[in-house]
Image (cartoon, rainbow, N blue to C red; front, side):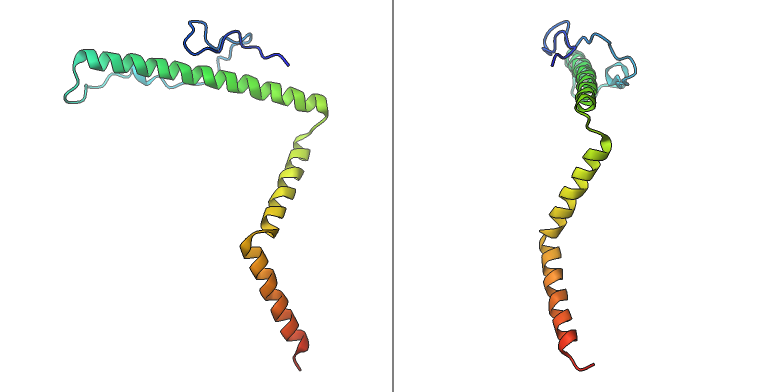
Length: 125
């Protein structure tokens, strides 16, 4: 299964370029928002931090693009395998119900209800 990322090395100048680049993924650009520098921060330190922030924001955007491409690829694989969202929902519900049945609260409640049932059925009501 090929993945349409040309280069995902985050240190590469071509990092995360997708064949069908996504333009609708919003990335907040906090580096461009100018505020006064915190006390004790020199202009060069502030500029270094802003530069690092811009790089991290760019990496976040790249990772969002890569994740979206992976999700599309996953969807294509599921479609080819004939798996539907309903199948996934059924599996999740089945696992969740199993988890409930083996939980301490469920087991203790079932035991207590069994005891009460025995007492009620044995009583002379």
